[in-house]
Length: 206
Image (tube, rainbow, N blue to C red; front, side, top):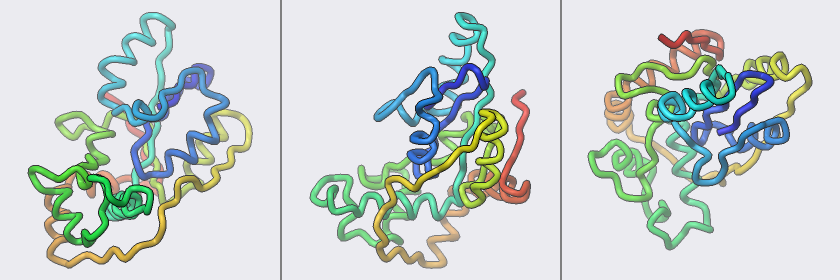
């Protein structure tokens, strides 16, 4: 999470949506940074704990922005990330686990450590699936995010790929895709809303 007081913005970093590239581009401009284990603070937690404090103590009313990725591709990115050679032999490695099996584990009631990846909705919404960010961008349409950032910061912003996972075989059975879409219907619906808004969904929090 990055906080920018002059721009009245806070970046909610959803895992596997290009967050490291955004962080590297914007880190020098941030007033407050939460990195490493505290990097991925949810929008709900920010709303409940950080926003009231920042408003009361510093008079900051921050708009939240984030990126969402096509749900299957976000999970595929997790799978590739955890297949990295550096993680082989650990409980988080997907070595020896097919992508189809990984997806079924992700949506199970009790996923093993390597499949306990959370969800994009868990990062972006409250417990009633209500969106908790003001500006949501599709990972697949970076010009919309760049245009927004450049207008708010008043200067060109360049995003350089970071933490790109190696390509590995990641096929999915049609029946498993059906189960995934049923289990994460709200996430697929939210992504469709952003996509239908040409990659940039503006949202008014109630």
